[in-house]
Length: 226
Length: 226
DNA sequence: GGCAAACGTAACATCTTCGTAACATAAAGG
DNA sequence: CCTTTATGTTACGAAGATGTTACGTTTGCC
Picture 1 (spheres, each protein chain N blue to C red):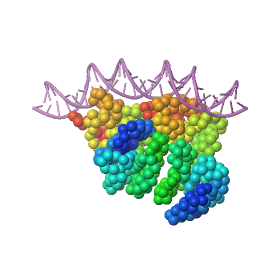
Picture 2 (picture 1 turned 45 degrees about the horizontal axis):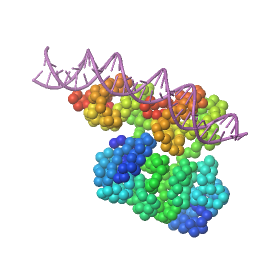
Picture 3 (picture 1 turned 180 degrees about the horizontal axis):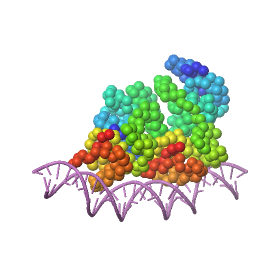
């Protein structure tokens, strides 16, 4: 579960692209759906931080998607921002009563949208997801992008930090090199799996006494085990 | 100071009555003003819990009232909901940037309005005022728009000050260039992320001995770490 | 023990990213 | 109006990060 992930549900390809671009630019990760059923499936699988939901989508309507989300115990607390065609008051009110946290009226300005997203996230998050990870002498502060070993900051590169984050987030679970490549190297990376080894090594080196908290599972991949 | 008091600023008597009636029905106390100057005076005297502010009012405009409220140390934290004639995007955005906490577009439904008032009140917490930021020889007075290095004022441009403010406000947290662009610059750029670098550099230059409090997180962005 | 596959390590070339300066243009101020 | 200041853009070099290759080492299995 990425703590920075936003699901955008919108069937118009142009608007979808516009939304995706702007939200990404604001520093969030984006996944998309173009109709109701897959939207629900994706929410349940990825548990995004927020759902931006167009009302008029094929299949299950935006209303019903929202209603459904607010019924599930896992998905209830995920904030929803409704995207409505222009000024249909009834829709707005019903939306808010359904449990949507806000709405944005088309046509919207990107900046306004980002402000609203930020506002909703601000008031919905107990900031628990981004808490620094600490065990013994190893601490990782994700917000500050900072890691410490026995009180001293260690200089991790962007990739190393991402890799460590990914390992920590799936602490205890083995991840194959391919999985790590997909998550840490977001772009389509035609690279060699051995690249992961190299970065694991560099990471271990910098972790010093805690190097062996990154376990090698021979024939499978790596896992973090504090 | 009643903790349930809402000031409604609106010059149209019909709308004013509609607003007053509905907000009272929702359990709040209401005082009213019909133009900007008296609105300011009333706010300062009664310190209401929230201000519902029409944009088009005689005398001082809603914008200026809002701006003025956000300048005073006593009134800064009072949330403002803007009431705009029609969905003029620019108005909305500027309103939000002025420090308004939300806006409602006329014609509005009473239920929607009440929901928004409740939402804004819910999230408006007793946060601390924008006190000057001071550490060692560096001090930044947001209200005075003034910064000092070792006792001497440094001349920051508007952009530099905004940038510094944004960094300070998220002190310790990394922010990507895109995030900074969205927050500091009010419009969207088309891949000119290097602009941020330039301004960071100018800022650092003026910060003198404290230049390195602005940390570069290579591959990610910048953060302030005093 | 012998073997092969899997993994660790080191070194290197290449590519990114960032800082810097210089320039061009827009805005502000007199 | 002209001058000054602020702002955005571009170019380039240095420092750093990254991916790859080659080779050494370990592991599991017979």
